[in-house]
Image (cartoon, rainbow, N blue to C red; front, side, top):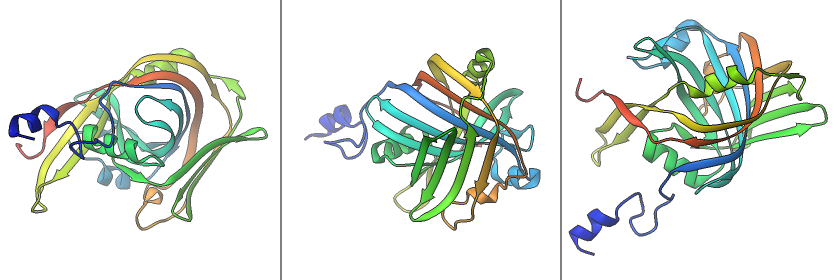
Length: 246
């Protein structure tokens, strides 16, 4: 393969058999359990990179069931999302994500900069309760519960929440271990078809772990819970701040 062929062929690693396909990436019947809780403001500020700004001491702990994901298949994901603002516009900063699908880990990290690690999240219904659990290895680090479909949620509010920008810190090292890429990335969720949304009573319990530190943003009070199902598209990202050039 000559140099021209490499330039033409290269998309992702490995060269001749990329770990994930080209997008766009569509998700059918993507199911969310999102528990919003209050946490320690000073700890939160230490976690979020400038130029993003904290608006309130809130965190969203998400469990996402994805049974039909183009290019990635069937998997489940969990993580912490922090409401922020960027130049006066409200959005969400993705702080950490844990999932059970290697292509989605590779694609999320390499394309957008999603902070993904391999773990074992689950989202399922147990009798009258929607239950989300997250295990890192053999250690349970998060448990969420919500009354199953107790009250309908306002679809316009859910749609508005999905329309706001999302932010990521993309970091890729050089071969010598120095930083090669350090960028703030913005992306949107598009082509949303909301199929159902509900609220209800909820709880969230987090546990310490050296390599999966969800407990570092402690639960002081559960504010709200949201359960919804939607079809959607994960759009491409754009670089909005280059830390190495500033």
